[in-house]
Amino acid sequence: MGEQPLTGGNRAAEVVRVGDTVRRSRDEGADLAARVLTFLESVGYPYAPRHLGIDERGRDILTYIPGVTTDHPGQRAPGAYAIGGRMLRALHEVTSGHALAAGQECVVHGDPGPFNTIFRDGLPVAFIDWSSCGPGAGLGDLAYLAWTWCIQAQGGVPIEEQALHLRELCDGYGAAVGPEELLDAVVGRQSGLAEAERAVIGDARFTDARRRHAEAAIDWATGDRRLVLRHRELLLTALRGRRRSP
Ligand SMILES: Nc1ncnc2c1ncn2[C@@H]1O[C@H](COP(=O)(O)OP(=O)(O)O)[C@@H](O)[C@H]1O
Ligand SMILES: [Mg+2]
Image 1 (cartoon, helix red, strand yellow):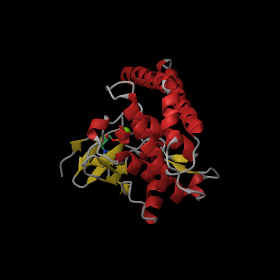
Image 2 (cartoon, helix red, strand yellow):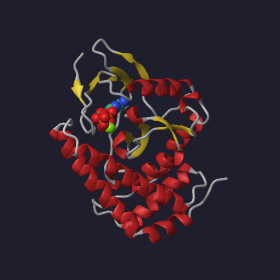
Image 3 (cartoon, helix red, strand yellow):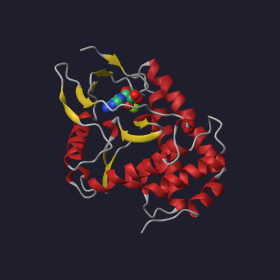
Image 4 (cartoon, helix red, strand yellow):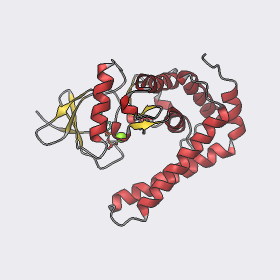
């Protein structure tokens, strides 16, 4: 059967489609990701591909999930943010206290951006790219989701609209997270990403392409952090007005 390259990823991983499956070269996160995906299948978590094994070329075999990733709110339908929040909350709940959480709060996806989410008709259906998953705290994962889905300095989205998306996403996630705590965690993820990518730029072991990616990622994170800090009060007001589930 033919192999069709899948583009749009952020790393150097080889990702191709073969029929109803995806073949993805194994990276350092692949073993844990396979165990997490197998567990998620066993509990019927619907928002992830299934791990079907390893092929003759040593690549992970995953179910292919039809749809597209998104990088702008214009590509998303009403309700998309609430569903995204619920999908992440469900992950944190089903893994809460499990051995895979290794004594931490839960298993986090680690990189649940809209670029690692498959959408159909503008609505999210699954998170892909589980290489960064592992034990962690729900708040950090929620903050990364909130940032990457709702906040963008580029793209011409009015800040009031970004604030509404943020509120909808947090309502969907549903946990009683304080607005300040959430925004601090968002800024923390933005600073953390910029710092990690700065280390890549200074490390000659990385390829030129990877270093160029690092530069773009730093611009992205610092620009978005500036936006959050500039509009902190507006974002806090939107979050304060939100409904909280018990
Ligand atoms: N299980 C899947 N179902 C459908 N498409 C997928 C799947 N896994 C990956 N893709 C596609 O391949 C692209 C790259 O895969 P990803 O796992 O995100 O790799 P990278 O580490 O390069 O970001 C994704 O943006 C998506 O378009
Ligand atoms: Mg990806």
